[in-house]
Image 1 (cartoon, rainbow, N blue to C red):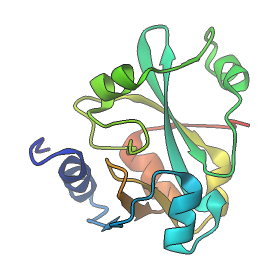
Image 2 (image 1 turned 90 degrees about the horizontal axis):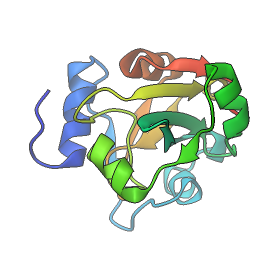
Image 3 (image 1 turned 120 degrees about the vertical axis):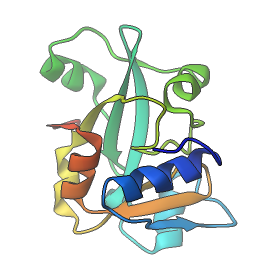
Image 4 (image 1 turned 90 degrees about the vertical axis):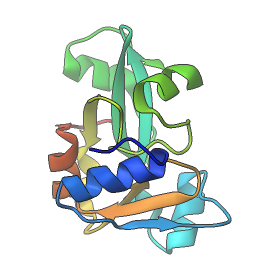
Length: 157
């Protein structure tokens, strides 16, 4: 995978390398929240895939959750058999994903990040996820998202 040209270019490259294709769309007005993305894409808020980075004992944990969900970190920690999961700082997120909070994508990181995928996202034929910045989103099926991230499927709420 090429890591030049910024975070969105890295996401595009990761998608193409994984055989999903470049489905990135850019919105000049920005899509900094799940609600803004759902409005811009004219889709259900629950089909927006939030990429939430947590600190799990000093290692990053990426939880891909429905935009309509609030993650229950205690539930996730219990399923992982681990202690407390803490919200990561913006610097921690940038260090481990190469992307800023609010624009983190499920793919395109400098190195693999342990990932959990919210099983409630299976309900949607097409998902939308951040593509590396506050202005870009990409579309993907649940099965392709599971495959390209190597995620562990879990109930997160």
